[in-house]
Image (cartoon, rainbow over all chains, first blue to last red; front, side, top):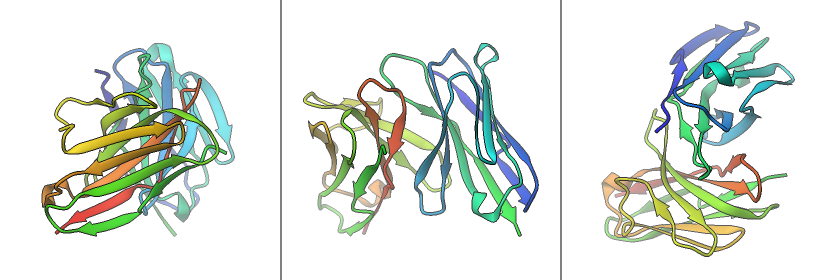
Length: 109
Length: 115
């Protein structure tokens, strides 16, 4: 199956800093989603981005499908951005997602 | 739009009892629903894929007789943990895919504690 690697595993920032999270995957995909898991466990959809670039407020994401990676950019980070960020990919017709191990982001005031 | 409701959010039960978890798509029809399990500080692991009106497809290593999945309508799937044991304690999360779409939307999860 598809392998998904996320980096870095942990990231500590001061409020206001910018950050880039990376997701590498081992095979071609037709689905890539970024999620933020809040401290209560809820997975919040950030982006559906199997290719291209999208922006939503302080967040943006880019997927270069031909090179098998995706990047999530967080600008002007806030303490509420803290949590685990997951990348999940799917490559078949069964719509399954394979999750990476996540990046634990801590934003300090 | 695309709201998935999961109930209960937390359940504590005695060893040997069965627990049912519901996953509902509130504002869309979900041809396919998925059930995941997450251990503390770990990633999500897919347990099974649930298609409306047909038997669930379980991932390798998941006991289908222990984790019973029913997808009786386009808006409801249930996961029943039968004869629960302490090692079944975990965070269970469901997701739903809109008909004709690729995006999965997730419920808030159920934290199961088996005593």
